[in-house]
Length: 294
Image 1 (cartoon, rainbow, N blue to C red):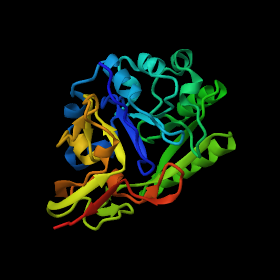
Image 2: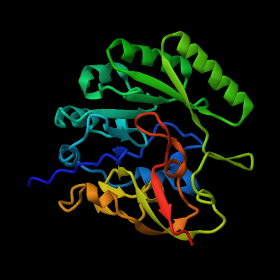
Image 3: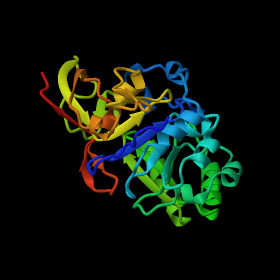
Image 4: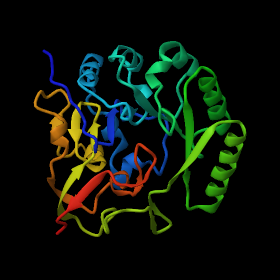
């Protein structure tokens, strides 16, 4: 059955398919596990078949500045990852959020460069560096290998509040830049040593003392491994209150713009409420709009 297209509007900033919540790292500060979400519960969710993911992606009618971002977990752990990236219609450009633990030679052999090639102020393949999990020497070698193969790839680290970790990140950044590799840093989000870190738009939205009611709408299409669509990352990671399924014929871009009642203000995921750059790398964007907090 042919499904109607999903055409995000000019204010929609992000379309993400979370192909898998499985991960081959065990970071204690994982943003996906905000507010004690269970790693095993996430990883054991149902998965869409490759046929269904391909059908879902082929519904998308995306602007040149809006890619389909693949993430997780670690999206390359999805068993049919290579089939998916090869069989989605060619006009869909993709970004990849990854820890780069995969076999880069297999990736180069199985992934067309043009799938992850577009004009943008940042790399289509974005690698997260986790100092207590990744080996930076291995990451650099893999990054160079992919870059030499024609992929545009960048590394990212966290501006960690722990001084020794932060110094290390800055040293790694200088080393990568000297090698001609893109290395950028992101703000640390969450609690460390009893202090909350992050530039958040709404007071008390993260780790609040008590849940409050509000109305919320998003600028993003967030789809979990089972195909459920959520209005925010907090609901996504908790598998709470899906608004639709990506294969529902009635689901369209207009659904994204609805304000929805929420009883979990105070449990917002930092990714949703932080003030950050948008897809054009212009600072001041926030993924969700919240009103009527009470």
